[in-house]
Every structure is written in C-alpha cells, then in structure tokens.
Image (cartoon, rainbow, N blue to C red; front, side):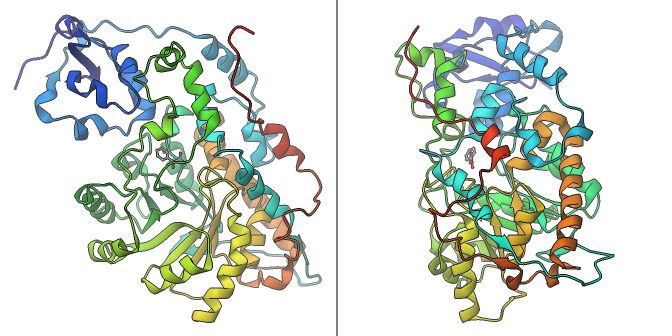
Length: 495
Ligand code: 173
C-alpha cells in the first residue's frame, strides 16, 4: 500500500505549471486537464494545492474525476491530518440563505407545490433549476396549457372510496405521478437526490434517477428499499461503451425502465443560469475581467454536458434493445410523426416533454401534443395500448393537472421541479409533504369529477377545445406568477 501524501506536499503544486487538487481525500494532478475543464481553468486554479471537495461535489457526478482523469494522474490518498482545513468563508449569499431558512414557513403551512418555490434556495441553485431557454415562453406555456383545459365532472356516482393508485410500466405506484429526473440535486440540499429516494420509498412513488445526479447511481440505489421501483434517465455518451456499461449496470441493480432523453443533442441556453456565472465568486468574476478561458456562454449545465452525443439517432434504438431488457422510453417526443416512429421501433413508451421549457423555446406543451399523438397512436394500434405508454411532463403542480393529462390519454405524469424545490427547502420531509399534498388533491378532485379509479377518468371529463388556442384568455395563475422571476437584461457596471 502506498503511503499517504502529506498536505504540505500537495500545497506546493499550487499553480498552472503544476496543479494538484484534493477531492474526497484523493490527490489528483490536473495540470494537463486545466485547459480542458468545461468550466474553465480559473475555478480549478482557485483550489490548486488545496481541498476542492466542497466546490466539486454539487456540480460533478461523484466519479467524474476518477473516470475522466488518466490513472497516472491519480497521485494517491492524502494524509487527512495534514490537510489545512479550508474554513469556508461565510458569504453574503450564505447569510441571506440562512435568514430565509430560519424564516421558512413550517411544513404544515405548506399547502401546495407552489409554496415550495419561494426562493429559500441558494442563488446559484435557483438560477440553475428555475431557468428555461431563451425567452422562457415554453416554461410558462407548460402551466398555461393546463389552464386551457376545463373539467366536465360527472355527479352522483357514490365516490365514498376513491383510488388514484396505478401501475406505471408494470410497477405499482401510489400516485399516477413519477418523480422525473432533474440534475445536480446537491446544489439545493446536501443530501441531493437521496431525499427523493427515501421519500419515494415511504410513499410508494417511483423515482427516475438522472444521469447527472449529484449522488452516484449506486448511492441512490443503495438508499432504496428492497422492492422499491426505480427508473433511469439516460444521456447517451459519445463513447457507447460507457453508456452500455452504465445501462447494463442499472439493469443488474434492478432498474425497471430506461428513459432516453432525446430532446437535448445540445443544451438550451438558459440565460438566468448563464448570468449567474457573471456574479459567481470564482470563474465568473474572471469572466467579468474579460479573461477568455472560461467559455462565457455556459451555465452550470452546459459546462458539464459535453459528453452528450448529438449524433444519437433512430439507428441507435435497435442497439439499445440489444443491450438491455429494460423498458425503453423516449423522453422528449413532441410530434405524432416521432411518436409513431418510437412505436414502430419497438420502444415501450414516450414522454411528451419539452424538458421543462429548457430546450427548444416556443415548442408546444406536452399536454397539447398529447391530443394529436394519442389520435395518431389510436389509428395505428389498440388503445389504450398495454405495450406502449404515453407520459407527459412539464408544468405539473396540481393533481388536477395530472387528471387532465390522464383524461386526454396519458398513462401517468412526471413531476420534476415540484419535488426538486420541495427537497431543496425541506429535505426528505419536504418531498413527503409534496406527495401528501398531491394525495389530498387527488382524493378531492377524483370525488369532484366523479371518478372512483384511474380507469374511470375518461376524455369526456375534460373540455380541451381551447387547448390549441394559444391566445385564449385564462384567469391569471397568481401562485405561479408570484414565484416566477422575469428574465432581466445584461447588468451595467456600477450603475
Ligand atoms: O435540463 C438540464 O439542465 C439537463 O438536462 C442537464 C443536462 C446536462 C447537464 C446538466 C443538466
């Protein structure tokens, strides 16, 4: 066994010509990697010769450095007794957050999913999570679309007992809702995605694990209870061997379905997130000074997404089928043409999604696309089709939103940000509270529309005639509008 490296030795490698950093107790020589770092070299140099774990952790998959840095650059384990503890400076932003955390409403006063969105989040997390692409038209349309669908409730049906549980891709679920994948959970809460795993276990909800989780895949699966159902969201790597290993490992560990993201060959420009770079303490400040080594047009997400393969195509689907027996679902389908291609290529389902408004701005909502897509699928095969599921996500905050999607043909609905905000502000308990709120809303709404179980929610229970009318007037969505922060223009200096 090689001996431990003294912190003093590491500290000598504190510059561009020789740059070592410590991450999770291991020493790495990143000198040759400096110029390749997607987030720029300045941010690494800030930690040259020091422990970078705290800065590294929330925005890198845990094994990123082991997997990407050549093995000869792995110097060894540091002697923990010799590392100068970096006392994290308490910033104004940390103080602001603490004040907000202390002033949070108690959980029992949180009455709906919007309540979780009041910005208790660190500014960086909020910018990354809440942002959407370009003018953020689609993210707002995702909510507005639900408001253009109206209920046609049925009465006098003895709704003493109502049951909103269902089966999603063969997996029992206490809600017709699954937790959709969102990246970088530790930006919002130190336990990251594990908050979701633990809450999902307690309440019989299915979690979709993101490829770019802050926790490692195995940490998440290890935190799950025996028999707990998990899905996996997949970003496909340019190196297919990496993807193959990842997918097969997931299958071995019991994941039931693979949701391949197909709407992100390049990440959308999320300007709130990009602007955050300019106020960041590290790399961002340097950008302001006009240094060129940080790619200015990158927010957090773009900086870590360079492995995603834009050449992914329909030709790859048989390959996925050949490497796994998991259900294969395409996440990010928006047209009947592609829905039919997915069906004919042997997938087990699709998610009608615009990636929470974070990809192609002014793309239509999943809910609106559902109408044409269901019509096209009906013309092709049995409906509902037990072998082909149609999911919707984007803008879901209420059980009534979910019921509308189900009435129009969705099997279940994904909620991403709603749960993300819940754990960012309140940890696991927040997620549990969010699930309870949805459960209460399902109970009430099912009774009020006259459906005793999911199969009684039928198209006739909604009037979607206004859904296609993007100009129709709807009452203002006050809760959403209150937490929505308008985009802003570039800031003047010292103005
Ligand atoms: O929407 C996203 O931010 C996202 O999907 C993503 C993609 C790559 C890296 C991080 C997040």
